Length: 439
Image (cartoon, rainbow, N blue to C red; front, top):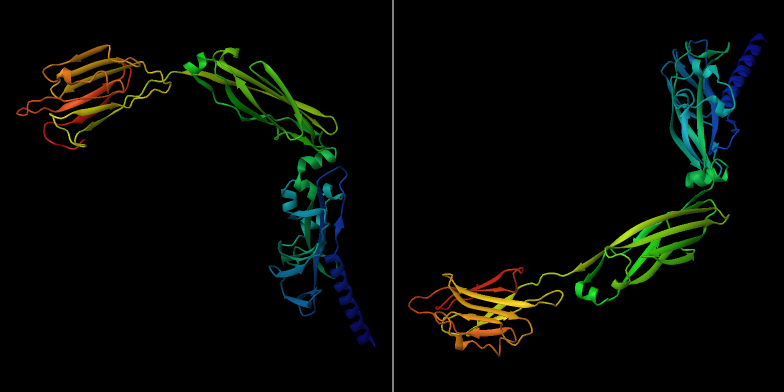
């Protein structure tokens, strides 16, 4: 009878320890913070319970596999524990998991966020190591799988019948709305005032207004686009209802109110109407209004430089011969003026032709538009003046003349064209009297 009682007592004790471990392993506490916060913290507090049997070995009950033998010294033993499943609401996300004793304290947080005093058993009898190794996820439920290393009975809490080593994790939950837009969440929860901020950007404006001096003197208009953008403005949380633009260009005012945040307008600038001769001032201002009537304004100022140009002409000419591509002292050479001027106001063309010894063969000064040169010099030693057609091909800026050179003493001849004293120098060479290709 006594033996049967002892067996029943042992059986009841083992059942009690198993139920105690199961209940402790799945205990889960939830707290609510007193003030608005995007974070919520829950704490899962558990312990591993093991006892020493009459054979000197230590045992613990795994709720999945039953009684497990830890041997004569549990210190350093590693076991896998399936923690309490966590159900995550669809409006929250688990953003952090922290070891209750170490990561939690080291991060600067305290038990005050859990609305409870510190538990000394977690500091004095904490397991040697507890790491969440993985998660079992099923829909909105997450079950942490924890790898635990025991310290052993010398560091455990002894209840009189069993030893306990504690495990604790804090889970941080964050509202999805905060993750999506922290500023909006804080405004909607009264942690900051609505944010209304006007931002004005110049999207398109001419870098300068440029006229040739001829167009400037003739008051030729120039049309340019000015485009401003207020799309980077913000009105949180209510949204922008209207954008009101005021733009002053060279003293002329224009206003526009819309809902798309873009201002664009073409402006016509006439030299005679400009207020300043060196710049055009553009002043833009923007006022935004949210749906609750809150407003904010900003302003921007730009200066567009005015440029009046008179570019130098470009000297250029080409040389041709008869027969084509070969040059002889006894045959005509045609030099064609291909010069141009950006403002189309070239006034004078000067020709100078010398031989390789530096002797002047021909000098012609011509005023553009005249029927002939106002100065003409032909060196009789090198050029027969009668062979130069002053009235025909010269007026078309194309002229030719035989260049008589003593065949027994041939000389290299070059042509130089200079339209005026400030022009670019251009050269072309040809050889005589023997046939050479143009180089």
